[in-house]
Image (tube, rainbow, N blue to C red; front, top):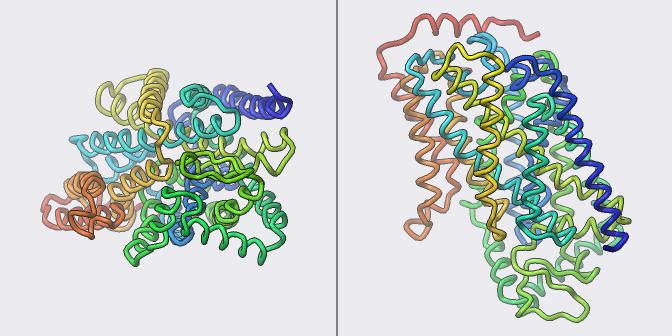
Length: 525
């Protein structure tokens, strides 16, 4: 073992040890389900904002999107980032404050399925059951992307076997999520969000200066792209560059449609419910948006300039070693483009500092996986077990069931992540569409239209969720329209079905309508 590897190992151990310690400390503050799932609604604006954005951005911010940029997908990355920034801003602006107020008004709800059930007064609990089903399915897929990121990172940095790297990430994320709950997740996400931010800012500056300034850097990137399109880096690299070069209007619409995901993402919007006061939401919004804009600029810089920077340092990613032989250049193979950030970091800094910044990738994976595991487990423990199976269950029993659920979902997610060729961006895209298409319209209707009924919500949820799965699995070869990102048609279908069924439903619940009017009159303080 070299001294460089040892220094990185020490950095990782210190960082991961700190995350587990936070989980242990937070565990003592969880006296009931509200504390475990929502932090007792006592989380401040800084922690709320950075934990929301860190858990939102996940490893695809440092691996998926930079990897797409590396293969010439700058346009798709740019429009996706625009969609995400707009979506984040709108979510903070039109969802955050109303959701916090509405969740308190309707039974002091602490999970999204519980909120929907209370808001629409679904005494049959069908809405809760279907909500939990989709949450568990899509969060399991989403969690798998976090485990894939951990495995890719450990393989890239330490040369670890895929399954061993996967196991390490699994154990660490699982340990502090099970112990500490929402408070631990928010605190660790805050730290991880700060680390991601610092890593992007400093590394972006270094890579620009190392290439001789902005104009020289752009010129070298253009030369790299020209060589890739000319076939100098092999057929696979050429194929990817040509595919990313053909960016159609439909591709732009699909990229912008990512914005719709924020309205229905349980692990993000639950942060709005847990903030300390309505008055602090504006501060949190400004912090979150600033973090996002600067971080996405870092994504573009590292992913795009990383092509020239790494080649200059003797490394080529995403190419087939059997068909690409370059003197003095190490070709890491097809699918390695998502390691552009980790490989660049390893070349930029002394080993220990590199280890600290490489923890930013681990931080991104962990900050999302922990939030998703917590949201999914809360849906099972609070909404299914206590809400339907055993309504008189004690707080301790609910917490135990929820922790067992965390373990079960994490195991399935890890099994999905066993394939070394898994794409982080692909996994996240599918899950993102699932939540945005199935839950987004219902959250908006719940907050803004008192005419929505339980039957309308159930019909919209089912149609939206099914539309995501069906659209995702139909090839664009059948018809070009199926090349459109599935979140957009699913969102429209869910919205239209929920509205139409609600209008046709003659059995309006007058008590719920009256309570809706009360919620709208609640103070914004």
